[in-house]
Length: 130
Image 1 (cartoon, rainbow, N blue to C red):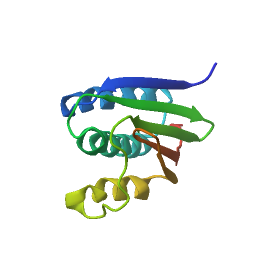
Image 2 (cartoon, one colour):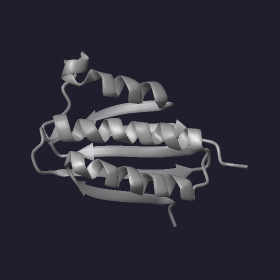
Image 3 (cartoon, helix red, strand yellow):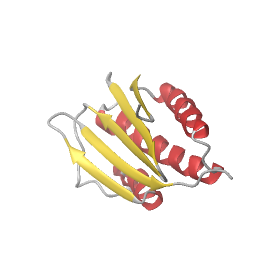
């Protein structure tokens, strides 16, 4: 049995707290150090907010989140079926700062364009509480 969860949450700023709570519960059950939990939740917050604001432009859609722990690594996918990622945007006003923060925290960070939408794939090395 795989050690993963997959969430489909309606795209809305008010649902970001639900995403955070579910992700925190999963990460705590993995017995991760608090610092790692906070960093992963920060990445999830940034990417989920981007999905609402840029992927769906505040319109209906699903935020799809997958979390999986394998050995000492958390694998995170945040995905949408929205308008797609615009690589030309670089300034804070255009949405670049959240991705900058997420990239800085992650050990590996990839953006995959889909026919409709974007898939962010993140890897983060973690430590378990001793």
